[in-house]
Length: 296
Image (cartoon, rainbow, N blue to C red; front, side, top):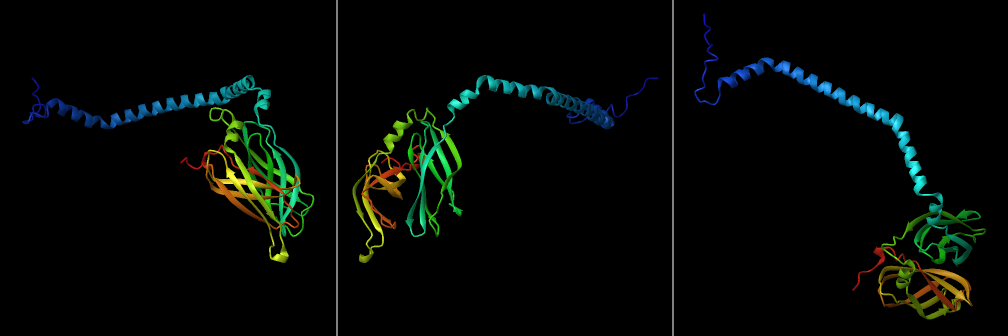
């Protein structure tokens, strides 16, 4: 006897949007949905196990065997291409320090001074330092030494009830910065074009307590003869008497315009000070772009 098709298979969607074939597939999917999910989870678990196992094997092999070999290769390359002699040849030479002194700048105030020379023609040194003396020490100071420059490193105005004895300069740290030849090909020429300062109309008036003048007065003009203006022009003013250094003073010229001349008046409370000439030691890092005023 021939089997009659069921009402389900004979169903026809009057809209024509859902065929019997789609209906049968939907029925099959619902009946096998749980099985399909189990198969998917099983395949995913197997795939994860395989990939994780391969990853662990590769990393384990690298850590046990390849890592040591890579380190040896890197060390061998470094020894082959950068010799110790080359490193020593191109590293900056040590700064030369000598002739440390102490000057009494006022009552219970002292200036600690040492001469410093940066022998390198392409390295800038940022120096942190202090002075130790019998019974105490100064705070930490900082200064910048430009390439090839010889100048005084000074810690001004240290307070002490007694004159410091047996001073000893202590170098705390030196931070080196190499001047890129692509930026500045000739550092010495570059500096010479920017550190063009001169003094004129120097006058020294000694203290005269009987006339009510308790301080020595040093007046002079300072000119910026360069083509560059500086937001803050810092200097060491060196006091001299018959060619000998007798004291120092800090000087800051704010907004020191190119080609300008400014009058300066400094007061010093050093006892029995005599000054017949002065010198200026610029402390401007001309390799720092932020020190320059915009061109007019």
